[in-house]
Length: 208
Image 1 (tube, rainbow, N blue to C red):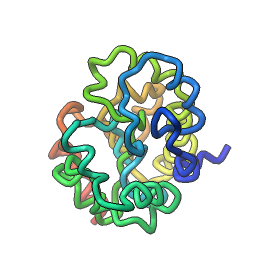
Image 2 (image 1 turned 180 degrees about the horizontal axis):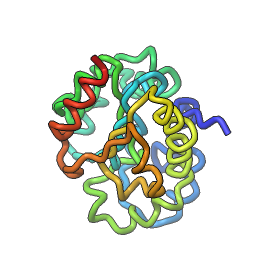
Image 3 (image 1 turned 135 degrees about the vertical axis):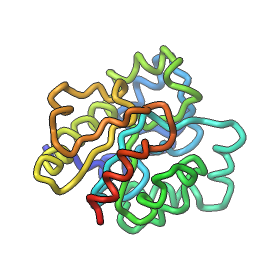
Image 4 (image 1 turned 30 degrees about the horizontal axis):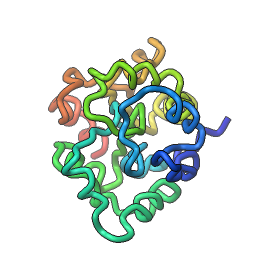
């Protein structure tokens, strides 16, 4: 299986009930959840095809004031969708203020790092959303993204070509063998929006 994440998410579309990946549509249409589907889902931020650092997050937050502002300009949704199919050609400085303000933002803007959400869909705070947590193991897109990490990225990490930083371990539900791989770093402060100083400095040294 060639788990091509950009190709997979280029299929996202605006259904009658909101922005979804076709594989997830039946579940999201028929199961209780509080994901906000009003805008294209941020499956990843950055060029996942070439970035040497992959940072694993939970899912994107939703703010009723700030999130709509990201898509206020004409054509913003279309530009957002083009990033899915051609991340290497995208301008990744045009992202949510959340990603612009973190201490590793420059790594993303420069193409050295990319962020990947365990679940692409936006919500207020998934750590307290039981219906949304329950769906994580049922959404096909979540399974595909895990497969992409295990089949495409981790072999490259083992070969020394890439690095993985895990911010939200529980939501990714990865096998225990992952934590023994050299080049996989578990951030000691998973709920902090910034990367821990020690992990960030170690990555910067490796990239130098």
